[in-house]
Figure (cartoon, rainbow, N blue to C red):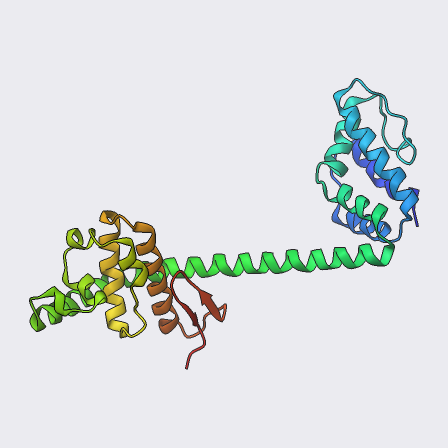
Length: 256
């Protein structure tokens, strides 16, 4: 059902050069849920004509919007476009009104709204998690450096031959310059799943020293990220979301 009175506030906003309130948009969207396909086509055509008229050389013949916009006033036309057309959402919804029955279009809009809300919530959670991870990395930097020295000394006391060591132990044992010559396959196959927490802490510190010299810095960065996230989950009593999917590891944040 089309309601011409909906444009009263738009005309006032144009005359006073101000914006529309959120309540107006909610009322307008509610009307779009009921508008007939034929009325939607007329309104859609009016909006297209107004858009074309922004060049100032065209005076469109409007139907529903004839009393809303002074088409001879270019500023009036531009302000209407800023309020209604530039957002893009109203035009897209009108296109749905032309193609879909009321129940179908409302169902589509509700699904889209739920999807947008989910994406916004996920973005907010991820942003919060990245902030917490960054703070965790700063807070533990010195601690992990000390642990690295302890783990490295234990390896040196055990052997002087790197060939006797596992891959992750070689990272602790060798200099960053030697490690920089490790190829892509080494970094792809590198695993930390059997490492103890103290060993992971030492590795996260050593990998940060190795990354600038390596020919595979992006792979090292993913390993660092995996280690930091694992250690963060072990350190934090409450972490959300419940599952991280990282570069080389997927693991639950639920504490055992």
